[in-house]
Amino acid sequence: MYVEKLPKTWSAICVGLYLAGVAAMGVDSIPEDTGVWLAVSALFLLILLPCLGVPISKRIYNRIRIDPAQGTLRVGRERLPLAAIHPGSVQAALQQAVPGMAARYATSAGALDVPVPGLRASDRGAPRIVGGGWSVPMGMDSVVITTRQGEPLTIATHDRTAFLTALAQATGSY
Image (cartoon, rainbow, N blue to C red; front, side, top):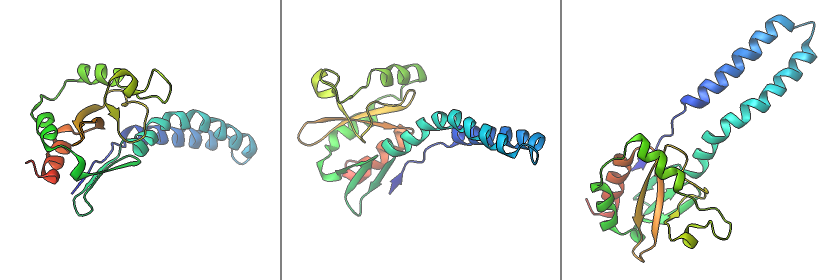
């Protein structure tokens, strides 16, 4: 029913710059210095990989899929039954105003769930972050919903309105 697509712009820019740099070096050094070119290209991978770390992490921990046929909400590595989500909390989150960029940065900077005593969300009385990540990526929007048992959950999303509308339809509260 709903699959949140993650932006690939940053990854495309990083890989494009890497390939352009490696190709430019190759034009000047191949075939005489092929070994040096390969070594320098491998060293530049050490710069590329950290730049791709955040998009890869977002894909693992913040990918959202709502599947009403299976009755699940999948966020990252975690699956939640749609029947366990409180429809009223979805409606309440849908009624909230969409935060601006500054508010999203402030909220994501404070949303932590690190598996260290004192930094766990439950230790601080904050909602648990769903998906397996330790925090909401900087600048991403986050939505707080509750389960029928009253457990508050934070879900990081790129498109708040589309996600909450699809979740409201899947839980029968729309």
